[in-house]
Image (cartoon, rainbow, N blue to C red; front, side):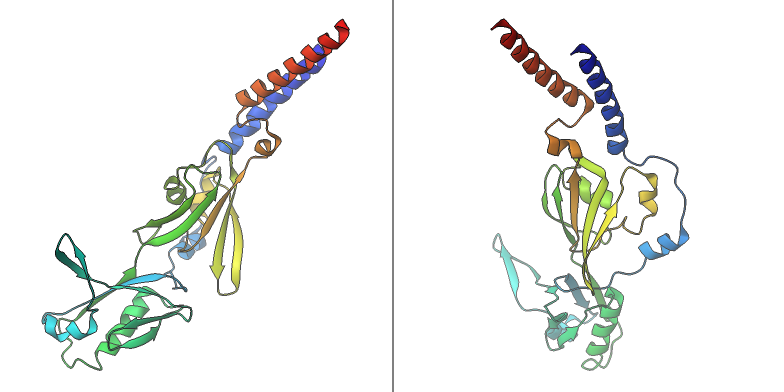
Amino acid sequence: MYKFFSVAVVLVVLTSCVSNKRTVYFQGESSLKSDVYKLNNEPYKLQVSDVLIVNIKALDEKMVALFKPTETVVNNNQNSNAFNDYALDRNGNIRLPYLGEINVLGYTVKEVREKIESGLKLYIKNTDGLFVQVKLAGIRFVVTGEVGSPGTVNLQQEQVSIVEALANAGEINGTGDRQNVEILRKTVDGWKKYKIDLTTIDVFNSELYYIKPNDIIYVNPLGRKSWGLGTTGLSVFTTFISIFSVVTSTILIVKTF
């Protein structure tokens, strides 16, 4: 019995060492990959359900007033800015006053701005002082699995890394497998699943380092969670001691009869 106990203790220690490798972020030395850097800095192409903010301004505001929404939001008896958020419908269109429906699916925000500017020139002769701004209304994504606060997150940024995304979801908890984080991403060919290892420093050079709008991030559980053995070497050891104590007590009780 005691020989078995000694072997079990050794196994617990080894399990603890493996656990450290699976829970420490950014291990190793980094290597720069220029092709990945270029890929991560390519402009994002719009997808269905993305939301754009479109601002149209001019030196003479009357000149562009017709192209702005007329609805206003009332807050504390004061009017705020007119609605200027436009969600891409299922066909990839947005609808602007007078300009009508504009298809922007697969376009970058720069290309959308140029499209709107071209449409305005059909109505406005003197475009001097005309200013059109187009940007994403934040990056919306879902984080689920072994994190502190799973749910939908919307960050008002133009770029969000996987590290920032997880930090805003309460961080990966003790039962999460940092070597096996999955990203489900909608593409023109349908949903695709990718895996990323956050325990290696090379994550910073990964093409998955920056997430995309509408990504779903899933943190898998460590194997020991499904076994019910705890999340750290200490908790595994404590669990084993409890089991060993119960087994030993049961054997002693049986021997007394």
